[in-house]
Image (cartoon, rainbow, N blue to C red):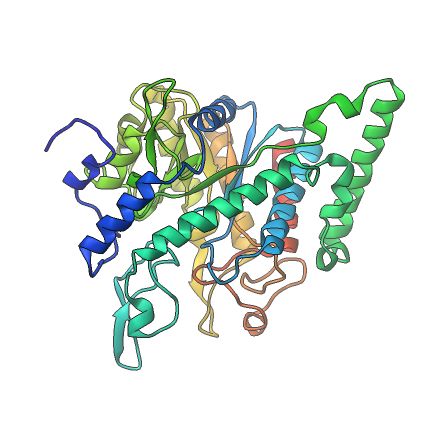
Length: 447
């Protein structure tokens, strides 16, 4: 195999979790069309995120990466994007104000349309069909027509991502993210809860601080950090034809950037060192992430660092641990030590969702809020044991009032899951649970 990297050189390597496209010629035509469309993000934005993540790697900032398990073509609306943004802004305010730590905000948004699956097919009442792989590939409806991989969906994913990005930029730069509006981010169904009331105390404290600054003669109107914010986009770089088509050469540096998102990550199922996903992301200059579970060895993790960040650029690589609450304190410390001793300047983040997924007696896939919190606490203790910085959290959440994860202050029970179970794939925290999690994390950071 050739070792020379190009946007298409991943095709020389084993590529797992790729759809079985029925018409390769139709796929090639779509990829060619995508390659002529404008980039969704720009190289300079990706470089800025690398600089921000370098502060996370150095222990000078904290990463909040949050958003949908899988974005939907059907549930796409300005209100849904706004409500998801509200939750992320609330969590960021709680973490910054309560813990005094600068926040790097990265959304699982504007591109998170594809999902890896443990099996390529599923069977219902004796009928076997391809698994649902996210709206970028097929539809969740269980029929032969819906489950066929349709390359035209790649175009729809691009267009929806572009619309989402436009709205995000308008919200974050056009006044919605102004700290004087901090009370307005508290949604009605959250405001009456214990979490919402606790958030209102934080919001009131921020307002007092702003009034104090103004009374001291500080021109808060001339301080843009108080009125706008930055939220980068990210998704799992799963469908490699789509990522290839949106990879462009930067006119300033001559380097390649995957312009489908500011940050891309590799999942636990696609992190093979000799695989196409690792090869592809080794060649783009975006900040990249890689999920590592308990099956990874310390040597595996160091080898991934060497493959994805051989130049040891701070902020280039984020390792996202997904160990499970019962495993994190034993499995993670050897990895932390190995990476520390290798000299790789990685940012570490905790995904407390995927290692704690199970099927409830009702038959629905779920997670318990207590297990999510337990894994985060174990992640912090593992870093304290080794002397490294617990750099962030990676959360699946929604701004909607869903009942998909058990527990929380409102104590969602198994019998409640069917009330508003709306996810297309994995269960998400609702806004109240997400806000509660932010307060719990801020307490861990203060320690």
